[in-house]
Amino acid sequence: MSQKEIVLSGIRATGNLHLGNYFGALSKFVRMQDDYDSMFFIADLHALTTSTDPDKLHANVKNIIAEYLAAGIDPEKATIFVQSDVPEISEMYLLLNMHVGIGELMRTASFKDKARKQLGIKSDRDDIENEIIGNDSNKRVSAGLLTYPTLMAVDILIQKANKVPVGKDQEQHLELTRRFARRFNSFYGVDLFPEPQNFDFGGAPVKVPGLDGSGKMGKSEGNCLYLIDDEKTLRKKVMRAVTDEGPKEPNQPVSQPVENLFTLLELTSAPEIVTQYRNAYADCSIRYGDLKKQLAEDILKITLPIRERILDLQGDEATIARIVKQGAEKARERAAKTLAEVRHIMGIRRFV
Ligand code: TRP
Image (cartoon, rainbow, N blue to C red; front, side, top):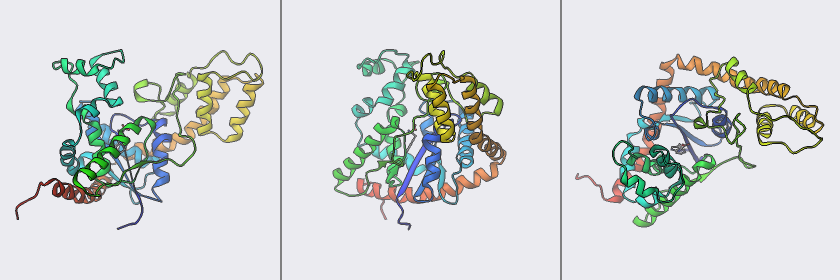
């Protein structure tokens, strides 16, 4: 057994990966794979909580595997697997649910958000519980959505992961995972699960903004640059990014939409180039068209090679199948061991 700490993270199979996923997750995974015992998976069971098109789901799983590999995750270093290929996760999900309160699940922010969306409730009223209980026909909020955090905790605990690199939006889920781990350990008087910690490389967390002048890049915001975007599409999106009328006086404060473009430039361009455009803004000589052209150029330098590898891999199902089979074997071996411990601890024991 290796002595390295176990790192685990996953991405839901709900669509193509974008630049936010790249800087927020993938590039970190790539940096971690040398130093940690790394496991990166595709959360297809979690995708079922919000999407229900079977063919799309399978295509999305395949895309994300291709995107993981294309971005530089190396199957010789890291374990890459599909969540549903590890049936032990589903069994432990049932077992752990016995120790999870419906109250704490209902209070989870992500649940409230998604439930509200599914029911078409605009307000952020706190009595959403009543709305949910009152709606059991067309607008159903599934038990699967409610128990999303249990499933995520199991992903982590079944591998006894120490470090879980996730974004801010997943902090609460990670906090719940720690709580469930402590609860299980103390209820049964065991020391089975380590408490997983978030991980980043120090420094401020990267927030990758969208192109619409608002907040972060996100699938549901429709403001994404995808790794799979072709050259023309990507250029067009960047050239259409929201800006303002430009600085009227020297050293004017930068508006949010323009600051977003600078942030993207900082992530993708050389420091001299960023300084050049910052200075041009400060002395009012900036032309946003030039800034955007530069930005598109530098983004394409990162994404185009990845895009090519994605396309190659998408046409090579045999390679994908081989990699996830190998990954599933390793993930199952660990999962089966933990599940056997959990079953025994909880009193689910076989006659021999
Ligand atoms: N909930 C995560 C997200 O939406 C995906 C996920 C599922 C995950 N299981 C996980 C992340 C386990 C880290 C560890 O981004």
